[in-house]
Length: 230
Length: 230
Image (cartoon, each protein chain N blue to C red):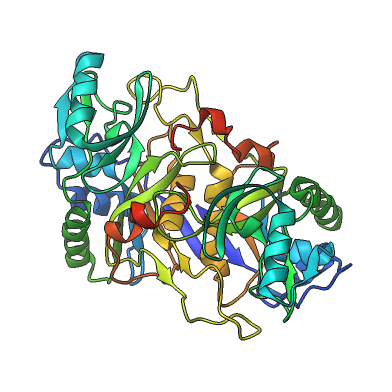
């Protein structure tokens, strides 16, 4: 069985905040003791805020300028919405520059190095708990072909990104067709189910997934050259 | 908290099998009593097998012919792999015709009407349990831009497909940016985390998600005309 626990009550995060301490306090409030194998899923927004990755955005022109700075490539444009590739390689709307759930006049950018942010947070949480943990940093992306957004993993530490089943055989002894499972994205989406959007719970704990490992956000970025879906 | 329960021990499903009875037996073995709000997630493969949606595929040429029959549109082609649109509107590899985890020489097609299949299964399970349930039928799809496959919802009954937060405001009172959450796909991916691929557990129970409602597989198909990601 896998358990998905929301961690409510995390206060508004300011630049320089100690995220690990806030998460430990949240666990204490929820009477949840982090143990070996737990994966701490954190929306990038509070990571970015803690790291000071916010900018003043007073007008729509400001917003467009910030997006242009954050994007290395514009894939599509329609009206105010642009589909972009960020410098991390992520393809998403508006270079992931976010004005919702932020103070007025402030936009939140992606962390510069989401894997590094996850790594630091994991070390701090492991130090505080003595447990072997994973940390996943998420954002909410739209997709091609399918309606609606889902949460996906943009950075991680101590978690498998893509479970590689190539060479694995099925119950009849034949090689499996679906051979690379994007478990980090499935974890991110699962965690979103207890985080909610309007309720703004920025942290969830996934217990029992058995997916600790050595993934990176990069593992989930498909080389456009080999992307048959385009 | 949300719980994800695998339902192991479901036997090989033959055409005409009583899926609801198999799931009830699985719940009994797992000492799991279905209760109001539970969502029963079922990989399409056992639904299709029970409905006789299998074909003889002895050669690669047979396989290609079946794919051509199941696809209404070929989006891309490279070697043996084609990206197709199925008659349901789903964009996926090889028209979702699947030769893994099937008896030799047999390929499994998608159900003709996945929502209808989910509806029938839900009614049978609700009759057997007296509980108000949801049923989700899933398949494993690749995505544009991102590596790895994830499980997604292809049919459902009694479950919300897309949670519409348009008009909802954030904690600061502004409209949310990510306004349509594909919760059925997040549920499918979450369930996949306990189903596994090689282990071939075809059913999972999601408890505590609070997502019963009136969705359809169609709700997750984006109109290509409005698909900025393409």
